[in-house]
Amino acid sequence: MSSKKLSPNKLTDAQLVKTGNEARRLSAKPGRSDSKQAQVLAMLHRKQGATIATIMQATGWRPHSVRGFLTAVVRKRLGLMLVSEKTGEERVYRIVANGASSKRKGRSGRKAA
Image (tube, rainbow, N blue to C red; front, side, top):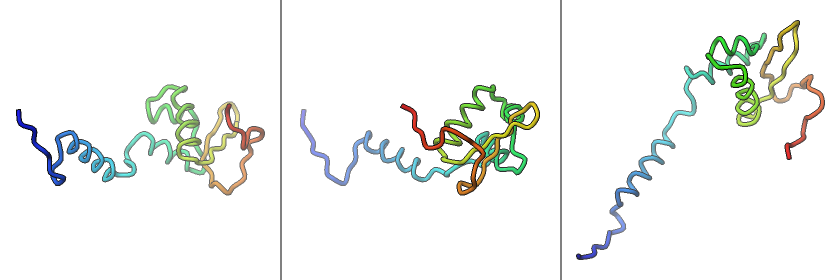
């Protein structure tokens, strides 16, 4: 068997796959406007906000999935200020501007152990 040296201008198949994946990732759109996430965020940005029941109806998610989305995606990953108010029997969630004061008491600024 003869061993061939690859010239620096030639890439192996594995390197081509890797660079192709990186190119796709870099050229990907930042977000889809027709996704469930976009729908929920639009509902939360409205002045009247949204309840867990309305989000469930719009997305087909279960209640625990809606609550997980609100905590993990809206609050933590996107860093948006989500406020909730109890109006009557239902809790209404709404995204407010980061500079606005929230009615939340207690845990602001604390981090989980």
